[in-house]
Length: 248
Image 1: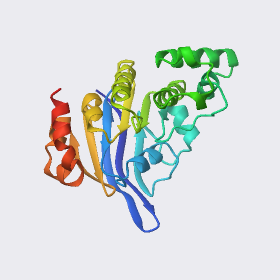
Image 2: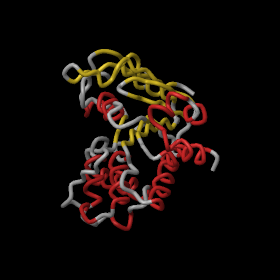
Image 3: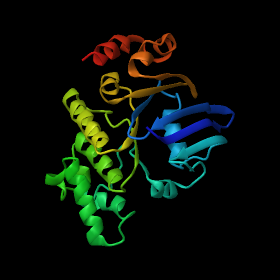
């Protein structure tokens, strides 16, 4: 597999605090990679650097052979990267269809074509029956679907998912895992930040672990969950849950 996203020696400080400290990792094309670690490890900051919300102090962010570090968010999105956020923030008074059209307009200047692209994303993610609902009236799982549909409507090559399973019950987590598998089967390269180890074990083919802004481990799920440093810094009591999920 060729490289889709290559992060090299990435650094970011807030004040004097090093929130991303010389981090490097590579995401292969069509791979689902999980970025995990304790709260404050730097995971969402890494997403914000990749997507252009923050500017790196130093280091390289390369997508499909093109340097994107320092670009603005709309430029990064135009290249083919899209993301969801930890807290879903739809345009509450707008319909599901209109929300997703805001993403579709990136590739389609025609309202009718943007509407068609939005409907395709909505139907793909199982929201077709709710396209005329106000976004604020959706359940938590359907707001997650909406976030993914809006990102998908930009026609990305790389999709960054930031804690899309936060606040979901076990049945909804299973639905979210199914959606991520469906997106991966579509050919998307996916980077996911998530705390729920059962879900990570189900979707990730490769895992990178951050702690205090530094990479402490990377590898296959089985390699990572058995790494003593990862158990110490992050897994703790979740170790058995992760181990059981790996063998399900």
